[in-house]
Length: 223
Image (tube, rainbow, N blue to C red):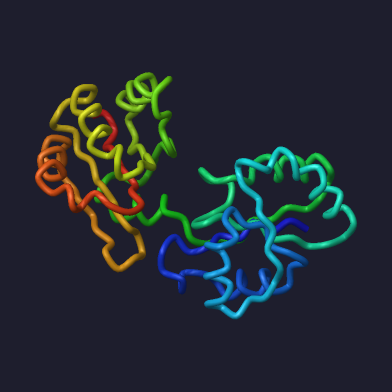
């Protein structure tokens, strides 16, 4: 069995009882960054061995992991924060396990997407998940595509590209489209900044100290 186990996106208490049990019972845990994950495991008294599994080694270790899993062990896959496979490594291993008839299950749990959407004040009945945009090639194409969607779009962005994103959207969708910037979800300095693109553009250029931490950007759909 391969378990996909969501881990907290900030507050270390945001993990289920079942997730803690599965992590304890696993033969070993695959972690995106073993140093980051060890802090979580130590906090919850979990001593299961850790192995690295990230974007730089997943192509090399996946086949070996599938052979190990086929031998009857149970393995948990975690990322630094949130649900594995959602803008984090995991897809290649899941696909390989499915093809090898190894059972895969994903536990429900923490993700930045749903809390940001639910608290944004934007429509939630239908939404588009974009994840991280390309840094350069294809970025404008994706933004123009998102600009035409009728549903709320969810974008993950790094702090040093937030102002650039808002500037780009101001040109593409105009200054009056509503949006929400969610920052540091579940952490001590969690904030929600809601308003038009122009209002957000003005605010973050006047308050650069607020551009820190993990950011989820939500854009209202085209009317």
